[in-house]
Image 1 (spheres, helix red, strand yellow):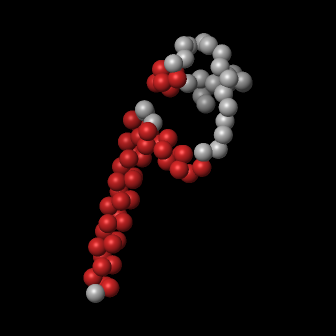
Image 2 (cartoon, rainbow, N blue to C red):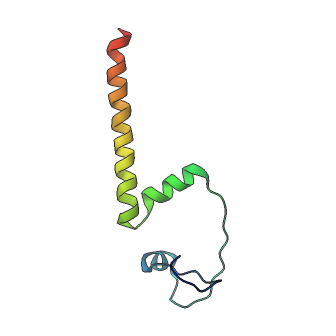
Amino acid sequence: MGHAEKGLIFMPFDIRDFLGVEKGVSLRFSIRRVGWWGRLRWYVASPDPAVHLPARLTIIGLLLALVGLALSVRPLLY
């Protein structure tokens, strides 16, 4: 993303550091499908705050919405 050179992958410093890769080194990558659970895990565990903070806030919001829904349905059942 963000460059015109075909066949090259540019990665941020954090990812290079995590993989233990030096700048300018040739690597081989394999790509596989991870499904929705793998994508969710990546969003939550990403080292980039611009990615993991919104993901974590979304999960917290979803859990609070489910608690609110459960609390609002309970009086209707009794």
